[in-house]
Amino acid sequence: MTTMSSFGSANIGAAQGILTVMDGDFSTNFLRNPTGTAHHPALVLNADYRPLSYLPLSLWSWQDAVKAAYLDRVTIIAEYDAVVRSPSTEIRIPSVVVLKDFVHPAKTTAFTRFNLFLRDEFTCQYCGSRGDMTFDHVIPRARGGKTIWENVVAACGPCNLRKGSKLLAQTSMHLRRAPCRPAAEELRNRGRKFPPNHLHESWMDFLYWDAELDA
Ligand SMILES: [Zn+2]
Image (cartoon, rainbow, N blue to C red):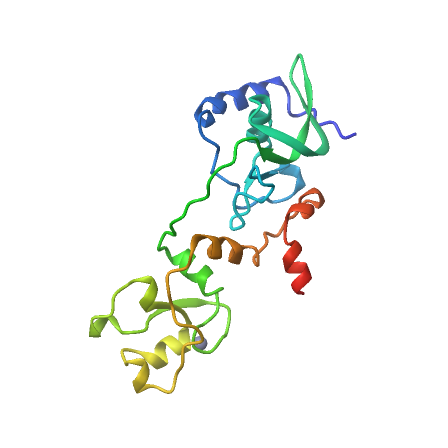
């Protein structure tokens, strides 16, 4: 067993300080860039054993995970070898935790740049290329086109330039998919296709099963 001597009682104390902030609600402040096992993030599952979110993947810092376990709000279902110590106790750092109370996911989808890219899977909706994306108003703003789900698509630079302020019918371009407001569930599932760089082996039982079956 690896011992993390650097995580002493002072760190546990600091963790308990943040605890009060979290109390009464679960933390949605997920780690966006888990850089590796050194940070020991914990995968957070809803009470139905599905991740709370895929993009970003619902990960807590080890401090949040330990706090939630201490508060009896989660069940620890997998652990790292590493431990943290306080003067009175020793606890192995959780690698997967499941919430005891089911959290109902949001039903609405925020109209953000990121969510729009996610809806279009970071793919140009005219030529299908990937990479640096920008946005295109299908009905150009100059012609009264609105900035809404139904009128904005991800587009690569060259397609965006080609289309300019023309109507689609005035070009030889075609949309791969008619843009519409995505259901929250649809967007959540789409996030599965973009796993973070680092995945701990203990998370694998709860992620991407269907993606592997599709492959
Ligand atoms: Zn394109």
